Length: 189
Image (cartoon, rainbow, N blue to C red; front, side, top):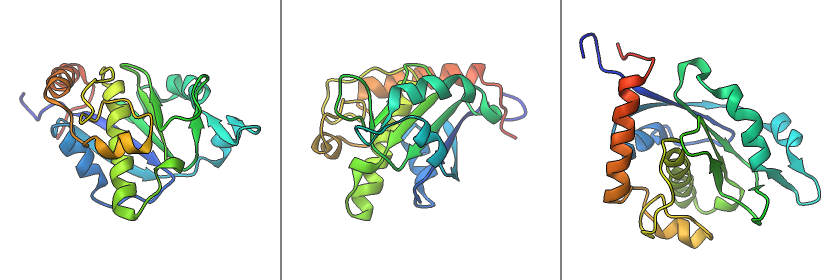
């Protein structure tokens, strides 16, 4: 395309400190078809607004319902990811590592249950960010336990899957990202 290629832009707002390479990791596993920007922020007020005091957890589905319409096209970003240093749940489940709608504009990842040494912790966050972005880009759960789109019932499930997408999910994701590149509002300079 003359004047630069269309890019799909992702903004990650995080409470936790991430390695400086984190945006490049996300870009790599999304086939270098996106650009990622990370900003440190504080979600205390937001978390308290959606905290179930009895359970000591953030109500992830209500948070998503509230925020998604507010972040659509936020600062020209196609997708927004929140990394929240807390525990989340949805009705019917004891906890969730993250939430997103299929083809939604917002993905949320909760880090409280992802703890481990630094390398494992960041790998777990990466996998959950990629998983939730996969949903936001239109992917469903995958039956391949090595694919990042596999549903994680346990931390062991998260540890056993790769940060990469299986061949089937990778092909679907590439098609969806190419489509978004064709419809995106932002041009790379």
